[in-house]
Image 1 (tube, rainbow, N blue to C red):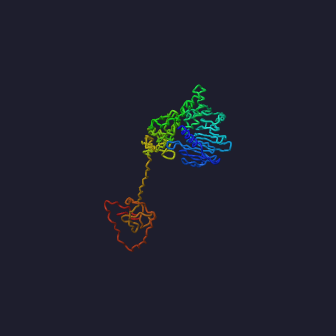
Image 2: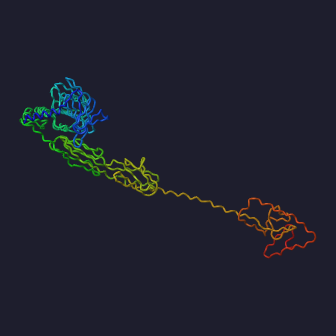
Image 3: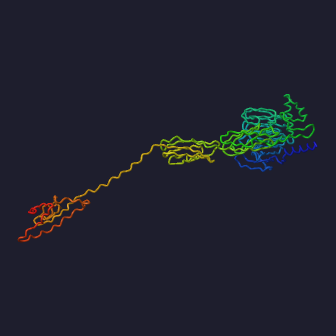
Length: 572
């Protein structure tokens, strides 16, 4: 039975690490799970690789992995002709700068970078081999330093500039350790079972300019749990090195530890054989459990926390939020405690991942508060006066609108429109009175602002006075008429006409007399001149004696007419 188990184990190792190749340029990129693509660099076209499919990849091209797909982190793998295999963790970019396989030595240069702005990416696991006794000269460049590898199995995490973790599990030649050169020129040499950390404490990325080399522990290995367990050969080699370090420090002697069938990395059992029996597998991690399973931020609520746990897992938990504009969460937590901070109104999901790719969601709901505005503005004391106010609302990132209920009293103005993304409004007085400005958001919330205008009362414009139409001036024209007689005498009334006719015998006398008062006329005199009177030819004087002229008797009560010029007295 034990022999059969050994055959199966050897077969599994060969399948996972050997990729057939027929030429030196036979480099392939495989999509192990999730989303994997290849491109020529950021900003260039991306070519997706289907799950479980492989494509050729050339020098200077990039292999790029995505994040979680459902609850499983994406993972890719680069297989090289010298049997080397490089696993690529989620949210990671790896560029093949150079690959040159010669009969005696293989030279390769890779660039490893985080594909996101969070600390969740930038991880690889390398298995550099020595086919047919040839040497390997591999380098992995990061923004913090360069790792030189010559026949080794280990992990690299380069989350950001100034942060780096390198785990070494196995070295084929003890005389050729892994050599790490930082950008500041410091050099560190790592043997099997050792870990270098720069700017990382546990799973927390922090600013640091120096590195520290320690024995590899379960905690340092948990940062690479998405790759699964390391190969048994590497685990035993690392355990032996760690046990030796512990023995030198007064712990369990390395020989005794191995003889007892215990492979310990930093005091943590990782699974070896027992006294010649079959290997005892470590318990598989259980499901990730979170408490509470959802968070609701009501108006005025500050940051909230939740706790993640998982049986048979002592590593670091990771968390990512779907909509970073609604809420934020710390990316990693060795203890499983996470803090969520609300940002704006809406709902989103936080995905928590633990060991063996186990994940679970945490629902997040953020409710905006009510609109905050001043209850009223100071009284306006004049017209066309402007006053400003600001509307605010916690957890709300949208715009506001403001409307006056009576624009004859006050109107709302903003730069360009009646809406304001920043909530700033200006009110201008128009007329005396009271009204309300109503401020609204896009969520259906509203708030009133009272406005009162008490400016000076404007004086009414004077009504123009019409000039009276002058009455026509009456004009007097005498209309007394007298009949001329021979000898210049007149009977009854007489005419008053042209003064030139006054002395002419037989013509009317125009002079005014007491018996002929002026008679008022209804209108002004005619503008055209009066035609001269027609003068009759003198009648011939009768010859011989004539009867005396008899004047009419005087009528009592009537005035006696004046005598005609040159004539006898009246009633003589």
